[in-house]
Image (cartoon, rainbow, N blue to C red; front, side):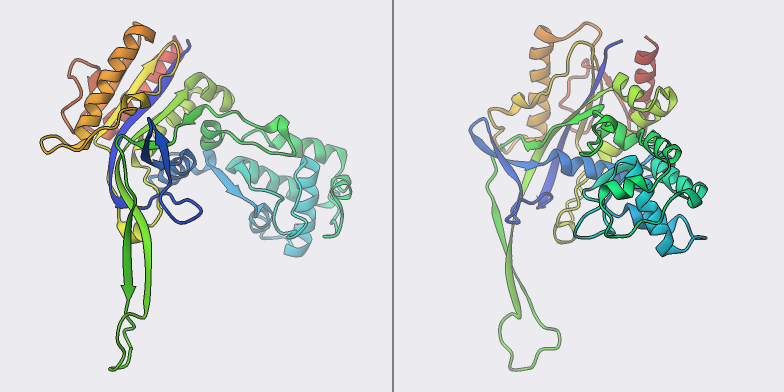
Length: 379
């Protein structure tokens, strides 16, 4: 059955600089003709992956690692082998799989790799088992020479290892390996850039620091600087294709259901780390809406094309939840399906009580979404 699980969050952050641009300023965007605060999708994806690890939501064997330092990881996993000799044989095995190393730094791969824990463990086992068959290549060897250093049997096994390793975060967010398009994985989950539901203006914090061991006749500060920040109520949106998730996890239905439950929790818990030592903006969402769509996904950002305005009698967060419910009602009437449904957790009391199934806490919400996903997969 065709089904999409959507995530609609309203989350107000205190003054912060969660996601910076190249000038150090908070990222922003023009939407509806007005400047909005913005946190990139990439930023929230990483925060979600970190939250999943921090709260141990997914078994380590089913996590991914993004790194250029694959050689070092593999050397560490071969403690009984000579490190220098192992490095050459690892290069040979990786070259056999089609992966290349940087010309400037042979200890790093040419670009960031996103590999599953099982894929990395598989390469370590391959090198150990075929130690004598792998030629210890010289650091100056070219890609063709490195690839030729492995026997045909080893090459076949090395290429077969790059299957995603049933890593949940790779299955969710996808990956691209420039040298090996055949092992690329299309994401089961799409994440939108979070934008503020209202207009924002940048603010500046002028700060100083004083030398604790300064002389008595020292005057003024010993360091001055400034940082830009803002405060915003964000609309966050993501959509998950559960059938694609099962496919990416090689048909493992139970793992996919665990991934759905974990993703609910990790998405809600995800808070970007930018400048948190300065601002400590650890603000949880006030509204978490999970919609199940059977025809096509519907991003509800246009609910805020006309920005929400500050009022004395109602917060930006409360107004945003009301706007979101109204927008969904309008769009669902035209584009929705009778089987569409909502699960939600609302701390504002602004979401209509008859619009879906209210949940008492995050744990229950995540569990209910898993139950719905299981039902959808059975259908």
